[in-house]
Length: 320
Ligand code: BTN
Image (cartoon, helix red, strand yellow):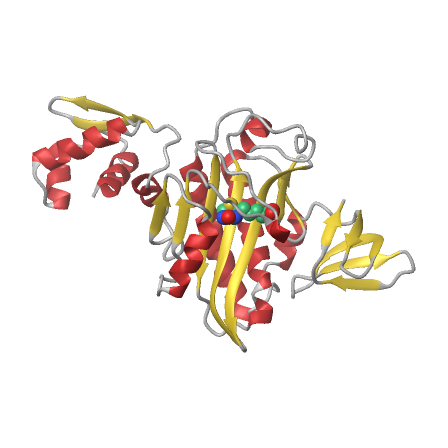
């Protein structure tokens, strides 16, 4: 009910009376008063005026289940929300959910991770209070395991779109799924899945975004940044998560129509930081330089080598 009250207060331009809230949710005045006090304790500034009611004056960057639920306005993605102040890894938790009947679209969010995982066996530094660590549990119907990696590109498209929508920052994608702002990484995505022959049991798509961090260790400060540092002001994490959910839901639907990236290819390529630029492909077998031409409908990066041959790069790292 707290998230519903929050939503009601946020959506109203005027005061909302205690009576209105009581009637809408069929609860007592005392229950409303308690919920309002809890919101205040969580950091919301709620004004209470006799004979008028309640009004939200400020919602700081709180991340709670209620805050997230009150912001997420998608049809199915990001529902339900499972929130933790602290967890090992949201990806690992979502995988357990996947094994145990968790619903398609479930969003696992944490304020802090004690064992955050990055790609290629690396860790993902996950301090509290300033970043987004979240994982979506997806159970796509009629999708083959070899098509699943394309969902990571859908995620990148959604994150870049959500960041631009919320901040106006020029968020770009470094193929396949890093998000960069002004040349530095602000977000990484780690997709994992459980499959049987020709069948996907579930996919977990983990997203880590540097939102309000203002300090980066010496070894990464030239390659990593945060939205706050680039934007010059704090960004509310819950609002950003809601924007990403909207973009992801839209992108997912377009993707599932064809089970490939045909419908998103143009938009994705517009966001591609390496498009038309020289890139170095660090493949498992060889390394070479070429011009990135954009992705094909399968999400492979097309790279024109110096001899004019166009390679379709399915995996490997790209350095700009
Ligand atoms: C990368 O190496 O670029 C990918 C980083 C992915 C980090 C996110 S944070 C939320 C989710 N949980 C994890 O343990 N990792 C992903």
